[in-house]
Length: 496
Image (cartoon, rainbow, N blue to C red):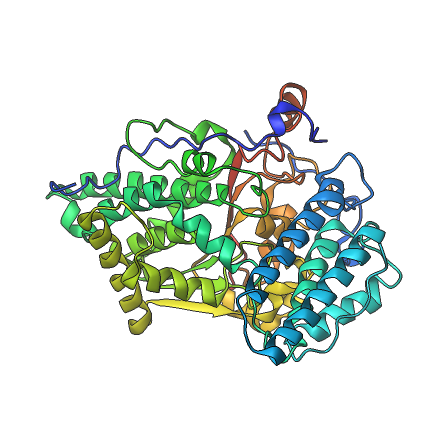
């Protein structure tokens, strides 16, 4: 298991990509044998996953670090954020209401630090209350923060944090992480303009006349590089990089130029070729992004989706975000609208040239037009903010599952979505991805599913055993450093 104190567990200092096939700036700028299930699928439930769950009391796991240290730190920073807002307010009744929110937050902190039992969620008129309380009553009655499976306990903490505000009069929609998300994107200007100056000009204008074979090869190279940009954009995860400096963030977000080198060798489970084979046969299809982080990663996802539209691969791109502030930096509708409007109208990046700003505005206007035309659709479903894994999606949210089945490809972004796909349990690393995600691969009608994930927690599948054993010996912290990644694809189970 991961050694959190080992030097190899530190966040990767930079993400280096070989992006020699991106559009130019304008002139003015191993297969392993399948592992067996230790228990039958009929016996799987949220407290009894296919393999043993990671739990907070497992001192060898990142779950222990998260429940014991990271979550109290994150909650403490959230309380600090609310005090900043409190100090800017002038209406007495609004101030008193916010003080009551803070009291509930400090109560949650006491529960977390004392490792108290998980209580039901208060009925705050959110669409996920029934799902939460059914799970607590049926599977986790009497469980505490450390004994419940890590995935459920961590999600429960964020749902309880939302409850601190959702029962208030004036602050029901308050996002304690919004200020952090905006600030982080504002410090990403170098990488933001590296992409905007290349993609402001429509794709077809950047492709010289060529034979069909040359054009196909160029599209393939662009697809592979944009997929890597979307993959490594996950490096800017606020919940995991809470102690990083501005210079660290700039290094992580390197996306082009002479400072970039190949990182494909760090993609330990690599289905990029298979993914291109699937996408290259699409014409005017539908692709869904189950989003991860707001800010720079969302921006990278949008650059990717823009190219998929312009290349004719997709006519529709559906973006699935969270209804509530979630895991610090996950995308909400507010984050989505803020990004597009800031790009189009804002003045966020001091020192940027007029041409750089104009390139960003051009992208923002085009993306907002996609929304108006229905080419881009932002959506949110209550199921995404529950403690259930995606194994339960067909049973607990069949409307969402059948909706995803209409897609030609569903791209799950980031570490949390990967944990939910794979049940976040101690599966052998050689477990095939399609086996690890269960119903999302095998349920009749299941769509093609890809996971683009930088590895930041213990669960790893789709990686040859000899590779994981070598890294366990040479880099004991490799599972949580963010240095390595996987791009894994399941073909789904189409209904004939």
